[in-house]
Image (cartoon, rainbow, N blue to C red; front, top):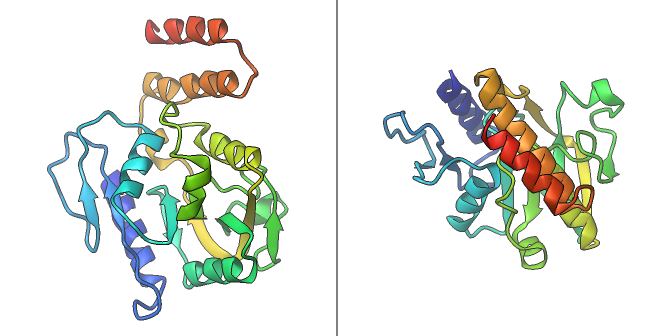
Length: 228
């Protein structure tokens, strides 16, 4: 099922832009170690030996590319026509913009953000920050450094945007760039115990990293999670 979701995302991405105008360098990081190695069409598909980690795999994908712009995308997405063109138009119009997210036609209108309503600057997760699709200038990493590989799954977007804020950089939602999110398809495929591990440790690490929890408290909870 998840393989089919990834295939659909790749197909919608390829169909979203005229290749004579925009060329995508698509890297798929496949985490299913049991799946026979399979190259998703029009991609470079990697089967890393290292254990899954959201930021760990994203850093790997980033290291395999050299384009000016980077898009970090979940596999449960549907890319609409001209989404990337609209994104680039926003960056061209505002040279100080270094990071952005597209709008989701399912999520954002239901949360008070209309499609085609302009550029919305801000740092709120699931509003201006759509963690399922982050688009930024590669040069941003010269300031922020690589993504923190301490985050395995959840709170990755919170850490990403906190880091951008920390360095005084600008992020915005581009409401004319549409990429739909099918909401946690990978997480829903896991059993309850695995879901707990993928989400709760990241929450406590996030609280520790950003000063909301002491190191002792974090290590104590991590030990309990390990033996759960």
